[in-house]
Length: 110
Image (cartoon, rainbow, N blue to C red; front, side, top):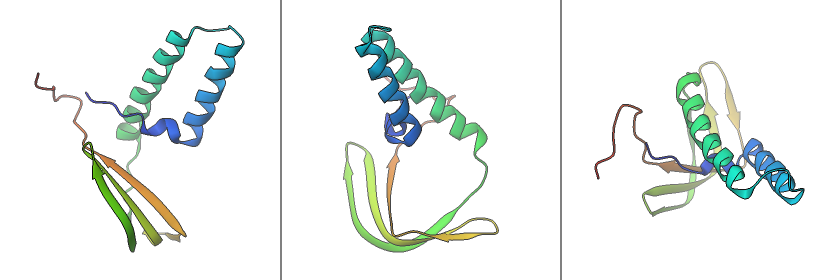
């Protein structure tokens, strides 16, 4: 299953990366172990979001920019209005990154 490093740029991913960097600088762990931890973080985030998130949301806004590179879509939306089941929310700007995903039971063709 293809794993992306997208969640490393989230607040929890940045905190983990900063902590691992400090531990490497303090000679508490090897850089190879830090890379294994980050790889496991990528796997765990994808699995947790797939299994635990059940709420569906929609949004409308003004599409400012978009691009498609290396099978990754990136959209920047200005003044999005989010609709959840019984709520709505607005923001100034969002960035949506969408990657091709595979289900856990699908295998890659080599």
